[in-house]
Length: 320
Ligand code: ADP
Image 1: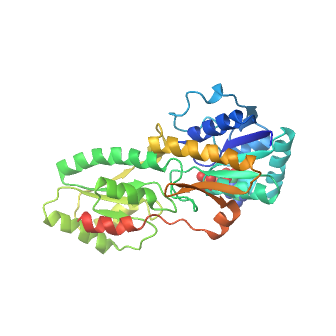
Image 2: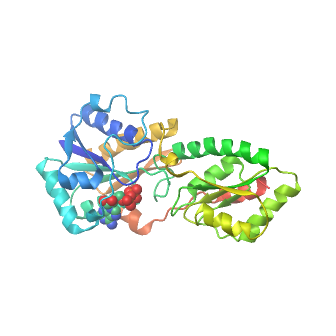
């Protein structure tokens, strides 16, 4: 292994730069040449490669987003696109690839692996919805960002006796809603992994009101329904003075938290080691305090991500 490349793909996430930096520095430390590919798989197919030096990744560990930019490029799901990508990798003399992204990006990595090109995946998405790891890059920063906003919402909710529906990201996974629901003391958490009825939610609001609570926060994962739709359904029951906040893309931005910087560094370092050991088709992750290495194809085809559902019950019993 002489020359490796790294790209970021799909939704950007804080901590991606820490991972890129670790890949570049560890690679150079070990005597490798490291290339960055701009704009994910789109840039790979277009041949948008550049050699990265130690200085190129200086001053990036604290920056959100990704210095390699990202893109969505559905054409890469087709074999033709993948073969074009491999052609470019070969043209630039790349022996191994590191892909930082979510499960769509992993699918691209798995496809390259199946075609014989050594690829290692690093989980990078604020949604935390990748199997085979407890945490993905960006999740910790995102939940801290959400909490900062919800703390402010709580101030105004209390002043006016209002019910706030806070819609957070998570198309397929309730992790953000779950963690920020607990962290903000939300009265109700609504996530795709748990069935719920509006009657239950209404009962939770009324219970709090009966005890004299002045505010109600409902943390809603976007995958269940939109905040506005939820508020509309709620309005059929009672007059709760409901307001909706859709946090949107602020959740993706910002300087990465300590945890995301450390995770990014651990993931980047270990991804390079995997390629050096000749192990393609792997994705790195963490389970407890351990760094783990999973087969990328098995992870995609046979594993399922589940949030820490015990938090759901804990919240029910401490947030009434
Ligand atoms: P994320 O990686 O955050 O889940 P996407 O689902 O948008 O984001 O995927 C990112 C990119 O990965 C896509 O734009 C495409 O280039 C590539 N990709 C997604 N699905 C596949 C697939 N089935 N096979 C190959 N490449 C894929």
